[in-house]
Length: 340
Image (cartoon, one colour):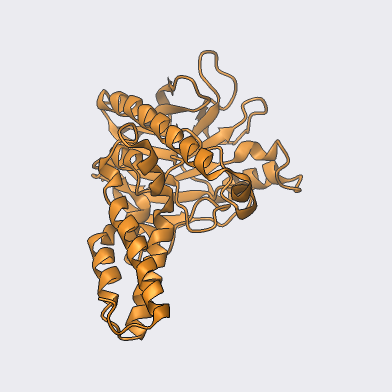
């Protein structure tokens, strides 16, 4: 297939082939538990970059009118849902129904308690943002209970110290909370909490989920300091822990008699095994009504979407938005849904 190519193009096509094989391999990740092939699971973080590289190769060969364009074209067509999960071409705001409710999710990075940002107004800025947006349901990760955030007009669960429940996650709701609890993950600071909300005649369960963190900063300088072998092993172990946490969540969900909403920080991508296990038949609100890249982790070098709002497939998704607010290392996301 390289006959007639100049040396420069031959080298490019070899790189194209290598990136294409990796992308094809990544399509299998959603079916392979990290506990079976932990090192392979690390590839899920690189899928956005592999997709972009293969799109660029496709454009390059297309402009040169070379038959090598078929390689990336076929690979991208096989994984079209991966491409649409990276960049949503078809989503967009639908007509918002009168009976719709809004759900916001945000990893607030403990309101800048460790001074990662020079700003001294992060906490007040975030609170003002919530007040302006007025979501009906608000789920936060990396929330510090030692200094509770008071939001008028909201019920809450786990916003202040509650004996027997691990901190870090909180749910605020304008709807009455008729039941609540925590799913404690072993040997970690992470957990999931849930609330059963009374919304008119319905009871809906909302999970606030924070899966195991990689503990790795994905910026160039930090990655340069990491030993590549140790980095891969660390990520593989993290994804094995995420799988175990996901299995506990799925067991808990199976006993739920209500329709479910899952909101949170998965610390993994939509191309991973844990995401696909959790999503199941639920709707990804970005896929349904988002536009563009949907990047939620603002310190990554490429579009990394690791924060999600997943809803029961009987709900209608009206809108989805990412707010480019630099109050944390994540961006807040919000969706509007109709229950009927």
